[in-house]
Length: 213
Image (cartoon, rainbow, N blue to C red; front, top):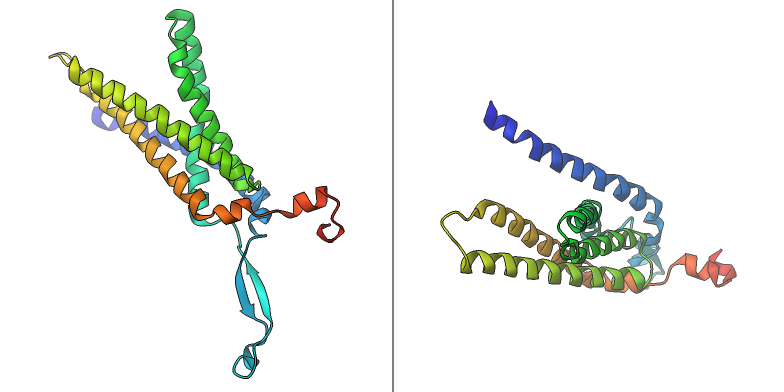
């Protein structure tokens, strides 16, 4: 019974984390789906019956929504990026009581950039979505790589009989998971770079283009 209760808190924490990430993801994905639907992915023949005799006119086809890899990248960015709030709280407490709150600042900045980049990725803001996500992934990879190197290096160099490996492995495992998520986001924006740089109807309307209205 005690062993089962030990899993209740971690499972509840994971469920709450996924739920709080799913809410902004669903709202933003539905609200800004139309921008991904502007991306042309090919053409289909307008008259299939005439294809054997002459080249028929083509009808453009468009994405129905954001590609799957982009959706995964955005959702996981919300999952990891929402750690910004507890990190700021930890930094504040650490500063007030221990004076070491600045150590948490890079993690807070990285997670905030990650969250904002995930939101902008779903909105498909031309050029900005790509550049913001690229910056966020670089921050995440740099910060968590340094964290893993420092913690493992300290543990190996100063390991004693009383060292607790479990917390180190848990935190480093999470850091490696965050790095893997950043690499996934890098792959997603690289694969759909053309779509992320493509213009959108909103910019044409703002520019006064009558055909875009």
